[in-house]
Length: 202
Image 1 (cartoon, helix red, strand yellow):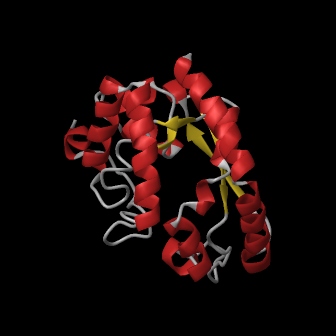
Image 2: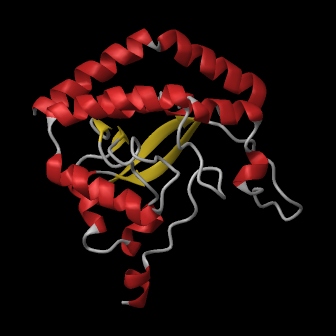
């Protein structure tokens, strides 16, 4: 309950303080990328329950001759890269926090199709409410392997506390300002998760 109160109050204050930046970002997205300004996608929440996460668009809607969307790295613009670098595209997720779908701190909500690919240990990341940022984000963000990321998510589940949340929140601000770990070595963000080797062999 204390964590939920902290999330609600902090998210509300941040939305008020950051409202000029949010409005300006929305206008720039509309000018540079067109409509829709807001991108929403279904993600697994607490105990895997689906919800829609909100983000500002960072990519164009360009398609190939077959009508299929081009790869992410071809649709990500310079402006979109700037937004991701400073996490401006994530600001709308404060609304998800107010709604109780996200926490400020917790394992990042990934794609619905990853749910059956997790090992039993990795699936423990869903035993807490997902977050805008988390222990994995301040320890490598997108520049680590999936296995390392999941290990850090589970570590958070086992060690969560309000003091740890405040520490992660402050370190996240530092990480964003330094733009560390935004991209994986060979991908715009992270490669597609296909399950761990042990999970695939099992």
